Figure 1 (tube, rainbow, N blue to C red):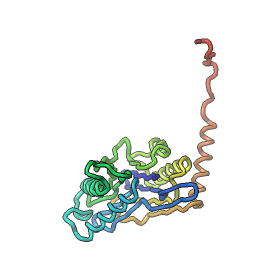
Figure 2: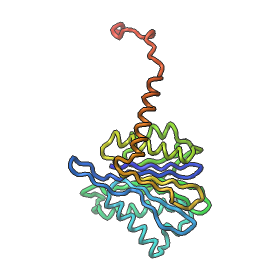
Figure 3: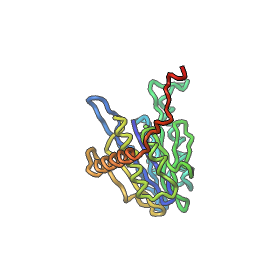
Figure 4: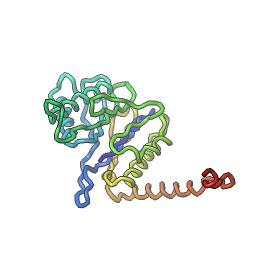
Length: 251
């Protein structure tokens, strides 16, 4: 399983991904799901991936080949990030179809989902989620983040704290807590955890972090978050028992 987050805020982007691809009893394997591209100076593009690993690798290779061969459409020729998302969706569909028969059936599930994030030219930084079907969505003022993979455990903290005007460094902490919450509840998501903070108009990916298992900072973050939650829980108002009645009274 996988968990990836892209927070698209006024100040820039926060991208976080885990690296676990298998979590059997005696076999844990990892594969990076955050992929940065070497592009022209007027753009920065990062790809997060979830789903079939073979499809993901094939899509990445095609994007790289198109760029090297200077194909008519590649990540350096598109004028907008939305165009890059459409291009990625078409490439993904083509790679999935290679594993299907004439009736559109396959012996395995070749689908993959992606988040394409970055900045091109003078347009604001943005993030797009590309579904296995090739279509895409972006963030909104009410939901300034995207998730792929095992999304349910880490969503509550993002819903409560992330806003378009959130401070970028605070958003990074929020995304790390979201990732840690998912790891705590699902063994199929795990380290190394990769994170990049992209600041608007910088066109640089120099704020990159990789947290291995038992990383001291992540352990401290987890302990601090859990202690804060326990303290908050202890301050909740007591249940008003004066309004209670017997369930048997209605039977």
